[in-house]
Amino acid sequence: MCGIVGYIGTKNCIPMLIEGLKRLEYRGYDSAGLGFLDENSKPKNIKVKGKVADLENALNGNGHFSNIGIGHTRWATHGIPNQTNAHPHSNKEGTLLLIHNGIIENFGVLKKALINDGYTFYSDTDTEVLVNLIDSNYKKKEDLFQAVRYDLNEVEGTYGIAVFHKDYPDQIIVAKNGSPLVIGIGENENFIASDVNALIAHTSKVVYMEDHEIAVITKNGFKAKTISDEKIKKEIQEVKLTLEEISKGGYEHFMLKEIIEQPESLRNSIRGRLLEKEGISKLGGLSGYIDRIALSKRIIITACGTSWHAGLVGEYMLEQYTNIPVEVEYASEFRYRNPILSPDDTVIFISQSGETLDSLAALKETKRRGALTIGLVNAVGSSIARETDCGVYLHAGPEIGVASTKAFTSQVAVLALVTLLIGRRKITSPQDGMEIIKELKSLPEKVEKILQLNNEIEKIAENFVDADNFLYLGRGYNFPVALEGALKLKEISYIHAEGYPAAEMKHGPIALIDENMPVVFLAPKDSVYDKVVSNIEEVKARGGKLIAIASENDTTIDNLVDYSIKIPSTIRMLMPILNVIPLQLLSYHIAVKKGLNVDQPRNLAKSVTVE
Ligand code: M6R
Image (cartoon, rainbow, N blue to C red; front, side, top):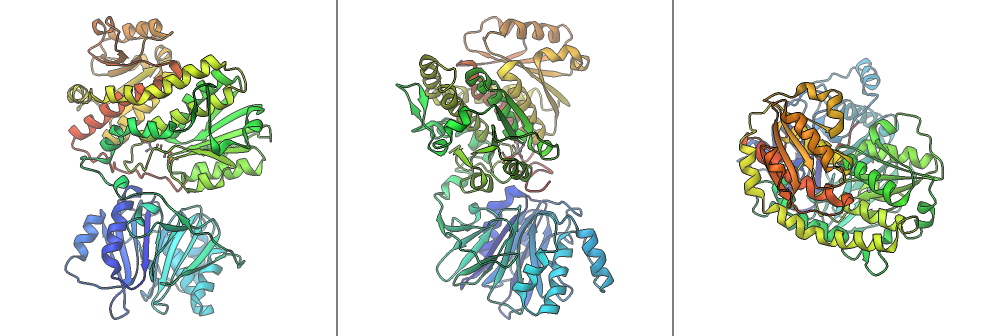
């Protein structure tokens, strides 16, 4: 949520900041701005409502040169998306500029105090309060770093900030609490960003800021402290990410590229992690913890959105193969209950970005209560990956499309690996272990086969561009897939969609069925197939438009439904990985046919780093 970039060095930073913002645009895209010191050391603050391309247009022809600057792409929290509320925000004189990702929760109280001191405000944002608070402290202390540090001790909420002042043309000050911030280390130049995607064109050496840390960055280096003034030593790390991985690579949209990448992302998720002869998995990130995990009295999985759906699949798997009771919780709810946790519990955090604020907050609460924490995270070096006791990376590669696709299939695959690891210590036989491995290995090829149905699915999509509602129904392992299919459709096509356990339909949603209601059934030939067929009959009898995701050897389903998409089969625990792919493609094509921007759907951002 909100992208942050910054540069200090000897080169012209304007094009670099624009390029960095473009790479971060998936984090928020309602307005954008740049703050820099121009060739006469005069602060400039250029902001627009709209996308980074609009900011670029606003800058065009200005010919500015600057070697210190900060940039921001916004996802609005306080105040509508417009030019006034866009970042950077500045003090009255325009000498102090600040960009912010996060929410200042006590901004109301702070604002009142500043108004009493004679400050006036031009925007509706919490960020403007922060910049004026620093301004007020700076005018008292006459030391920018101390003013920012002091100010952050008064602030409640979350922030990743970057600040500079006309009086300090050779430094940018950054600080973090709850929102990600990373420093990129160069030669005679340094960078900052809210994630490494914005840096890797320039450097692979990075320093991750931790909560309550503040740093002053110059072109020659950086010095970090805690906001309570303790000295700290930060480690420089090497990131292994290439520009190719974060570009569209000839595809029209990141979402399509990421759907198509799934055979490869699945291969990467399982590569080197299977011990075929023993029928077990090898997960280095959990070694040293596996005894404790296997002895857990309970496993809790917590996540948000698509990652939560993967967690639901994990619940079915873990209970079936480990016999350990499992609960799945929305991270946003978990943190606001009084979760009963003990050191006998293991809590798994699933997150693509590793920065989702609700999941991070749930993680902190879990650690306070002594349960073991495991992270199943895609983004290497992200906060959840760093803060969990142990974990497994998904290795799905960067996911840029706001609608999560390949992360979901990798999450389910990694949950299968974790299930195998624990299950073999509990109730899973070597034969069952070997069967799971065989099926895991066959997934990439089966996914490739499903992707060949792309054109067929695109044709089916044509019939649903004008639909107002959709129902997705599945049983057992496929119930979470129904939820995921519905989420994919609503977030990118703005069609209202709901997922339900197929058998629950008759307890209410069946009232919605008429000839205008498309219903997608997940109907693989498994042990509940006949029951799902009965549910299909119930919808058919009421005139609903039927789409079935069915097994390739199913010849009878065509007589029941309007459209069938036939896909290969696997064991039940892995079917969600195959079943979800036609649903991803269906949503994608419906949204594209509606002329919508699937990579940047309205009101959304890729990584939700606010509450
Ligand atoms: O990065 P995370 O996996 O923690 O993100 C969780 C959700 O915000 C995310 O899955 C969201 O629901 C996606 N837009 C779904 O496509």
